[in-house]
Length: 358
Ligand code: HEM
Ligand SMILES: N=C(Nc1cccc(CNC[C@@H]2CCCN2)c1)c1cccs1
Image (tube, rainbow, N blue to C red; front, side):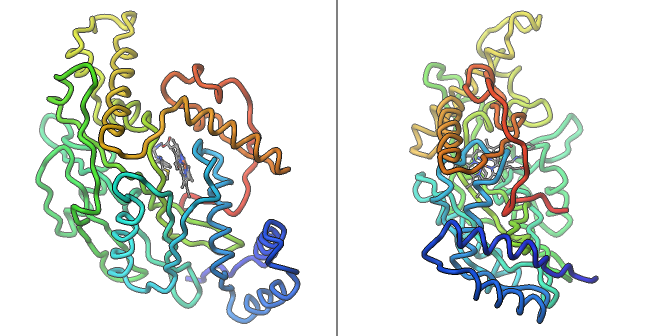
């Protein structure tokens, strides 16, 4: 397999961007010359820690599907480019979760593992998020999270044994450049979870619903200056609607709207009673209430929409374009009741960026 050498044009554009936004880095000339020499010699170059930290923060700033970009400057970057084994990667993912979770005060963090290089191809994390619940095929439907059926089957084929519950945390599956994937169970103290209750309905707890505190995406590449870091898990905190309007509500996920509507005593015989909408709101009230009770960071879609527009105007003040994808920015609940709904966005694609694996 011929590995892509680094595109020198991308590298130069990034180095210039770094020096423009970080005047203390001085004149880019010598750095540009050294990078060109290194690319000529070994087909790629190595980012300094400062370049890597800046690149990861700007990749977040450029994420046009992300509503949570206001705090892009505070991203914590864990430079782990020296890690060279599957076990090392697994350990860094666990350390990342412990670091980022705090005791509920979640810290936006990215861990950067080695890039793809002609000399050493990169490892991949098979899981799309560090924390995922198993999905099991049963005679009368799926038990657990249907979104993770394939990952559960892969882990089981590799020797993992699930307990058949609705919220079994899956192991990490780390695939090396060659050879067998490594399975790694996440220690319980690295996976903070929140049981869901409702402030007004005591029966809600009986539904036995819960969700994990930290969303940590592990299936995207961090692209900086022509270099791709295919193993760079990043986390923020959840917006309540992700759990309450999608993960627990979608028919092809935990599909809880009918259950909640029944317990609420709603008339589900006709769509026109808007029973789905009533159930959705109460499910989202429960998610926000439970995370707050547990002291776990979470934002609501109204607050986050306002914050995003603040970010947008700050970027314009800074003379930068802030690209956004309307179809992802507008929350899946009460869209038009949030300010982000009532406007258009620039849709250009900028780099550095987090991209889905090609
Ligand atoms: C700090 C709190 C944050 C919040 C509340 C937040 C919120 C969100 C939400 C709601 C989405 C849409 C997800 C979906 O609909 O499935 C999203 C997408 C995204 N976010 Fe953020 N985010 C945060 C931090 C971050 C951080 C720290 C990064 C990276 C360093 C990031 C990068 C992205 C990217 C790349 C996407 C698009 C994912 C894709 O294309 O599949 N976000 N964010
Ligand atoms: N709050 C978060 N949510 C989030 C962000 C990016 C991607 C995702 C997962 N999106 C995949 C699902 C499934 C298809 C559409 N949405 C969630 C964060 C995850 C990592 C940092 S912030």
